[in-house]
Length: 417
View 1 (cartoon, one colour):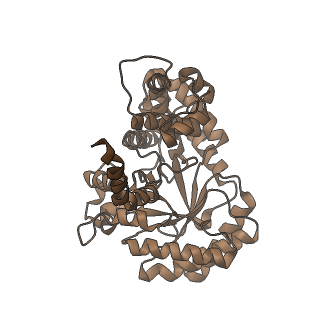
View 2 (tube, one colour):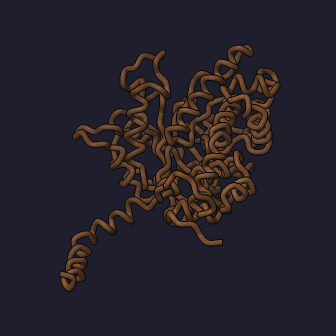
View 3 (cartoon, helix red, strand yellow):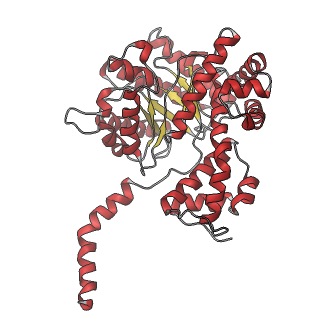
């Protein structure tokens, strides 16, 4: 029997060779680089070079007006009293240094349509301002959909935007195009073709243009054949698809959900996100939750109520593995970072203790699976990237540096000291 094992193994290798190749190609694992905690959407014609700083200043002003003490901040944001001072100090620093992690210039629903000529002019102006301003690690444009009524406008505006942007210099790092209202994998395939043609047209290297898809139609969640269309979209992206973003209100409305019940925490939203979370797992395509349209504006009581809601929704998304979301108003940055930092600050002690066990520095009562070790490293890396955790804190707590965490996240093993 032993002599037959090499032949048996060779037979199995032959049978599984095709799937081995497919598995490696279709499920490469986590995408390299930092994922922003949010995407801020602003109308394309309203963009100005210092908009991130303006948003940060506006958020700081609202905190000063509506939650100026640690105790008020903690109460409004739903934080444990022991976390309030720490989280607030980090939020204030973040709003001063890097209030916006990712910016999208919107030429779709958030943009007032005044005709094609005005849109092309606005696209060129926004691109010129973006090129002159710079300084953002991640940015991009949301075009109109590739449905027939808006297809020509989407192509023309993207072409005009890129032409102006690239005439002033290279494509900004982290640049991404948002494609809304996708209903089929065919539209993703068409977007791949569009990106390739625009690269040739504007002198970009192959694969440089990437895009994200908005999950905001029933058709992308469940197709006419009963299959999860979004899974087909993920694999039709040809390496250019970087993210799936949930569209809270378009998706809810398309299901006939009454306006007062449209929310990120509606059961229909949970179902849609669960489907595309599974579809994207292991592919390197990142996930983003949607937005809350209850904005922190008005009286102190109204602002606080909106912060309480937004903080709870962000915390809920984080606990479900959606580490990014949309922000539509400057003051939402306060609750975004409050909830995000609380998520990491509250969980870091346990994560570090468990990671220390993985690294062999301690012996605990929990046997960690390799997949959980990857998840722990991913959690710590995300905390580092957004500023919730410091590298010195991580190293002191588990003995691993950033490079070792990156290695563990990708391979399931960590590099030796």
